[in-house]
Length: 265
Image 1 (cartoon, rainbow, N blue to C red):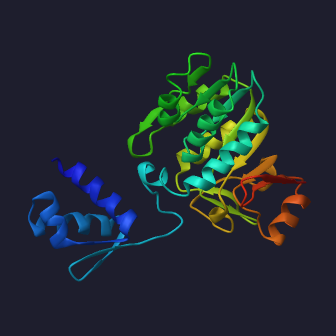
Image 2: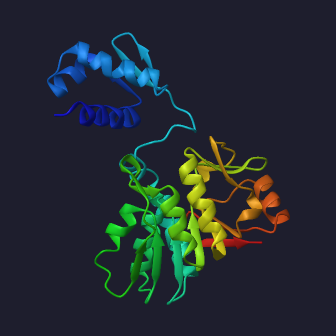
């Protein structure tokens, strides 16, 4: 196994279990404990972990980018609820901009489940492109751009230029943090630039975000809350958030325990 692949698997284990033990990793990957310690030292320099006696602990923060494969498995029910709500708002023939979030995958699945016809999807998500590959009655357009392998996303100037070629009916983006003062934020400036461009090139701007992202702030700013028209989330936000969104003129649609949903303006 290549060192880069080993380190990738160690990171995935860290994000799943929050800690790792040197001796266990040594046995798992059939390498020396010293090799594992060097891997962990590398992660420590990148401020991803805190080394402890015999292992390391994940240094969790809102700004830490979690591998896509792990994020895809988190909060599946909440993402499904969000996907159903958004799919219900999309009409046959709509042109949609989709970001590379894991929630976007559920939007696509729910659109197909709802039997939506003649949909056009413009996306920088490699996973969304793959998910749509078998849908012959949809038009699927890649933005192009530089491949971000760990994130299954296309970014950079080419991706931005590709998005600017279109004007969509709806842009559907997610983010890693939503805050009353700081607005929408993400962990990666390249992601933020692409998402802002999507919002700028759509008639309706939808933020799809699960309830854990409220009152969180990440490294890179996307836009103010006034930069979106609708927030779709899996649970009802706090009263303070509902008042704030209403004052900003932002519609809020949220899931409920029985999987129905409510709309507040």
